[in-house]
Image (tube, rainbow, N blue to C red; front, side):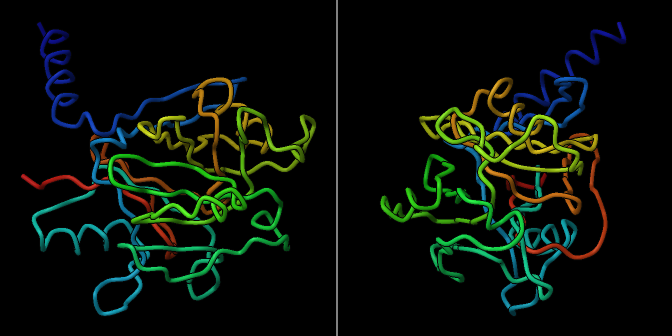
Length: 245
């Protein structure tokens, strides 16, 4: 009877929150939390500052802003690298307004490990583009964030990833399906290399293009499991918005 009630509850929750579903995944003995978003239906947004220009920085702050409109986060994750003042390192678009231009050239750190890419949210779809491809296509993104490196490019791992790398961090990223209907977010629950993380998107999540969002500072929010990672202020945040009861 208890099992039946649990199953019924899971079915009801899935029906209410079909726009995003999260699960635990193990790949090559490393553990991950994976959240799949129906980009054709979900209200997927980026957040950086409030209407007064004050940095949000935390999932709780985003929820406070959304509450004024009768909304709340169903899921969220840090969404790209940032400077000390939390401004985006690369291209950033919010509500159709460009706040930071595209950075097409190589540079220091993971961001400059070309090819890097842009996560673009449009009406009814979401896509990861390699940066130069993004510049050529010039898609009209309602929201966009640039980060790097790319994890998967047209079904292949980034050419600089090494199977025997010793660089281990908690990492998070996003991959998208070819038709833009699926946006799949992942955060590692163990320390992983770029090669291991990219292989998750290529071999398990089956996303032809995937983008590294950040490492070491990676955090996630999921209302259904009461997960809300805390820490110092973040820069850009990506989240799925739902109606509050």
